[in-house]
Amino acid sequence: MNINFSPREARVIGCLVEKQITTPEQYPLSLNAVLNACNQKSNRDPVMELTETEVQGLIDALSRKHLVIERSGFGSRVPKYQQRFCNTEFSVFQFTAQERAILCELLLRGPQTPGELRSRAARMAGFTTAEEVEQMLEGLARRESGPLVLRLAREPGRREARYVHLFSEQAAIAATTSTASSAAGAPAPDAPAGMAERLALLERQLSALREEVETLKRRG
Image (cartoon, rainbow, N blue to C red; front, side, top):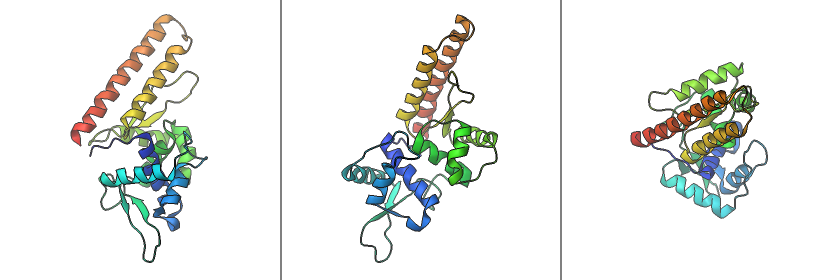
């Protein structure tokens, strides 16, 4: 299935998945609830200031892609929406609770390290160690049907590499380019040859990302 969210569509889907897990008693969500979740100040990066009209447009666009459906309960006075992106009878993607929590955080907050994901996704699923999260990320990166995440080159000053989801070509390429720019602007650790090697690695990684995105499109 070819999925290429815009950053705002990724925010809507991430919010619907998040609230389905964390506040099931309030799910499906009304338009106002989706709006508040998208503009939430905590657990979001970047913080957005979407309008009700913009969110309705995003929901309509995702509905046309069969990734969101209106599902109002009996007696409900307002339309309510639920996601069909993953873990429903209509979804192509069926994830474990931990995989779903990891991907949800990547949709809501962009590229993150295994340590960051372990801490932030704990409200949706339990993790023992950051290494456990990294193993799951590597599994998502090597799925037979196509990679869903990509490991970025480790940035200067970071102990861990970050991972980015591949449901948004724009976001993934931007994250990879940002990593390359950060590395290019940092002082060489030992010698110019070391910097050249690192830049060559980043160029290969960016090229691989583009190839993976094209593969996902063809498989869709």
